[in-house]
Image 1 (cartoon, one colour):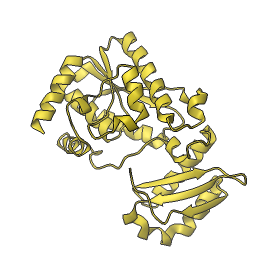
Image 2 (tube, helix red, strand yellow; image 1 turned 90 degrees about the vertical axis):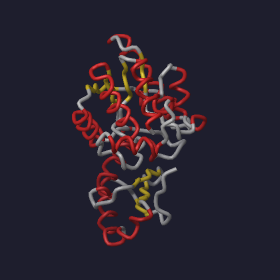
Image 3 (spheres, helix red, strand yellow; image 1 turned 120 degrees about the horizontal axis):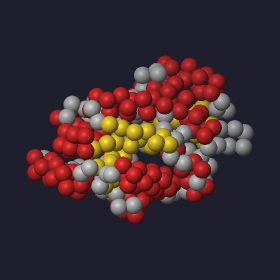
Length: 261
């Protein structure tokens, strides 16, 4: 671990001043916090804001950046206007990341940053991640991966840095709740955001609400972590009523629960 963090520090010093793609998730928060400790005001974060980012997620990310002490800028990205993204293909994430990295490279050039980086770690399978291809095409660095830090080590480093994200579950964008091939719309994303906020309000920590579009109207499928499944039956009637009020035609619970990949 000491060898890897020393390598990470060396990588960051060699690439400063550095602009980091920041979402407030485990990896990007760790990278921003460590980079801020090493580089001070020679590092800044960028948050991509679009309908696929929950408002609470944006607020939490900004609050964490303030806690870290790092400068963070929110930029509006336009992937929703790109038919290649909105049609929701299997490589949807590529178009999102390509839009983000294009915006960041322009910002870096305008502001005098030497490089752009993001929070991919050594456990992320690059051949299965369309975002990795976008990063390569846009010359975006992955310092955590370069230093050989695994997800478990990123969490351990986050604890050392005092980050509240150290044990957070993964939280991909809201578009991931819509099945591939079903168009991504602002209306659908808004429903998913309200639905997950409702479920979270009942105390569930690891969850997804899948947005399944059918001829009769959208159907919601609730998934919670297997260890939280026992908490569903007592509140299922209330959850169903709340989701119907949001606009779902029907509500079902996935009996297998949610398991991260």
